Length: 339
Image (cartoon, rainbow, N blue to C red):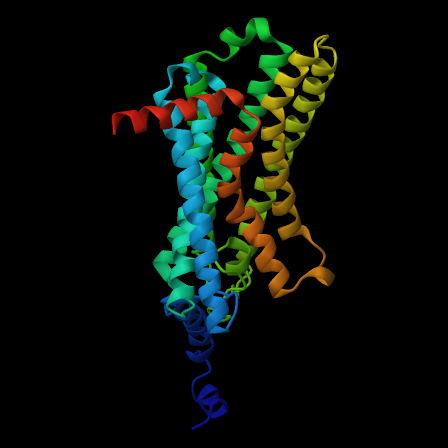
């Protein structure tokens, strides 16, 4: 019996098929998302020798980041003369750098060493959360550090009042809390989307834009809205940093002594170099035109903003900071004497 005969036999009887088709489609969509147990990350290369080269290169960068940031944390915590707002924020930055590279580096090295591309669904969510958390908190901290340099150079008489120990703790806590809330919102929203376009990511670690590409629902617009809001806040922080350094350089150029100008620049230029590296590579990675986009270019740029900064930061901050270098030498000398 076909559907026409059935309607004629019972005109008041509605067919169940139309009401079943829509829920079934939605159930099929959800099952496609829930059936994903792992994601496939983008490999740097398929050649075994180059995979091993990638492993050793990342291992060297990772160990350099651990050593450099570990020495900065230990030196600042050990030397009482470095218990100032600038070094307190630098200690927090070193902690975030360690967290950031530890979120991405070990998994990428393991995949290259064992010639695999996989990451579990839970592992991908954790990686996305912790990387977003560290990146957001670090950018917030860089903004706070620009304010610290502004007050120290432009308003030195008010430095103790504006940046007392309690104010510094509150600022650092606000940076960490901002990172946590931002990461929680983005991770929960991203992984609540139905995914039906496979499980292959175009990145060597789990990142929000790559997961959004797998979504088959218009709900991804909600996550795009969150990203737009986050970008607007990040742009406001960037404007604040730029305006702070405009005021800083104007004040430094008015310092009569060359030694005073050199000391002021030595404390500001490392922070400015770090902000430039962090912001420029991130902007280029996500806002570059499609004409210059390729898998190899994307991988190189993503390394520049995700893996390289944690390893380069200690070098940048210690190279022009004589006070930090002297404290580090004292710590190393003390360790050798105790042995």
